Image (tube, rainbow, N blue to C red):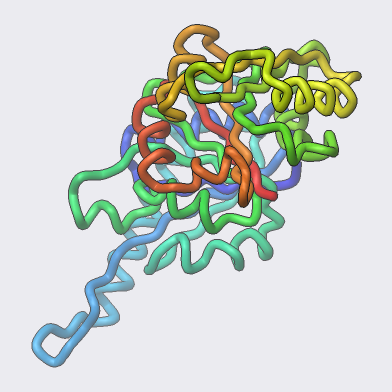
Length: 278
């Protein structure tokens, strides 16, 4: 892994995500790139914003970001050895995302999952997890405020399995995991009454066995009419270290791209969620 992008809005959740990213960087020997955006109201004839004012806002944000990075490095064992860089810019993360990923060779984005109620705060990066997941060209790891960093031993992978035909889709998971005995649970939510032994599920399981025969794994079939609740029930019962999703068109996971379901999972879950890209 080359670079981890960490959007920062200086909230508590942002600090938790940054701390998690710093620990990941220690493990994967990745660089950390901290990025903060600030909002500037659109100027008009009645309300003019001086360039000096904008410059002062930027300078203040840079100072605050520098202090933020130092606090994160001090909180991580051997944090002084972390390779970091940072940038402050006016605007919105999503409009700059592709260029940031390209310019800084970003392999992973780690950000807070919190959703701000304040309309102005919605402008800052930490409240834009859902938009980032949708637009990012690289995996996005979203961290809830209550999450504590720990080694990844068990992974819950929510999927329909039907489109998994190459273990390369799991590369981001394996890359951020440093244990060879990691256990992956493939979680499929089906409507009540379809059962665990339907022909479709058995066929999918055979594909799973073929593709992941060299990776410790198991299949978990959850019966629930509500996909979100089925996922949350699995997490509550099995307590995986991380939940992985891979939204795909025309599959079970396509429903997770719907904002209401995705937002429900992110708001209610208490473990990191890694969203892979096709």
